[in-house]
Image (cartoon, rainbow, N blue to C red):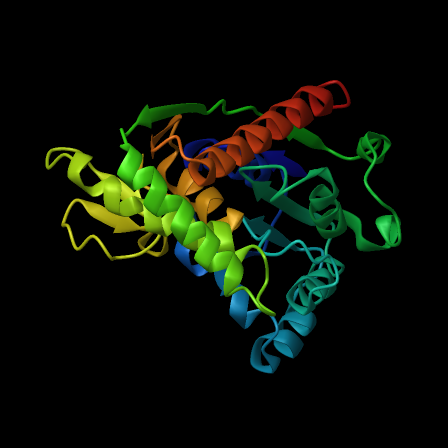
Length: 291
């Protein structure tokens, strides 16, 4: 069973129904530490196993002995890398192969693109999909339901003057000149942080913000690593898509307000997010036709 886009309460409803319909002795929840769920299982015994512990010997062999068809495994927001062959995924597959009872929860259907959905299908049945790329035909015979949670991107312009634009171009040229053997992606990453100096004067004391790091030293700005639960205005985007995804999952935000200078680096990140939101929406729409 794969469920996409559910809130915490909706996940709990799925679990309640499943436990009412099946004779389950014990539930194992595989989760990521910063997104640890607080499920309720009534009188059924449960054990939570965190992402980094899945590969640990002290868990691995004991769980292989303990898990059988009287157990339910709940995989909650465990898409942590796009690498389908990642060791932690492979260890999880061993657990999942021990029982027919498995529920896979994920808020978004992928990290970057639809091929990532194969990670979830592997959780459902690793043997069936080994060596296969993604096609919607894989949905056949699998209990999959998807829910779309539209997110609106709202750019808020921060004015920059000609002097600042010139400084920006100088900084961009400097970064290119000093690139050397470094990855080209370091240039937009550094420029995105650089333009934050012109956003700081427009940060309001009575608003809450989210930024890549702690450089602003303001109480009303948190970082992505802190993973706040409330909807916030983005000063800049994180380096990794997964960090933004985690924030959106944790907060349930329906809007993304973003402070933008209109300079090319902010437009780059803004367009990247727009493209990702479009891909998610298109995937959910197509998936709904196959479930």
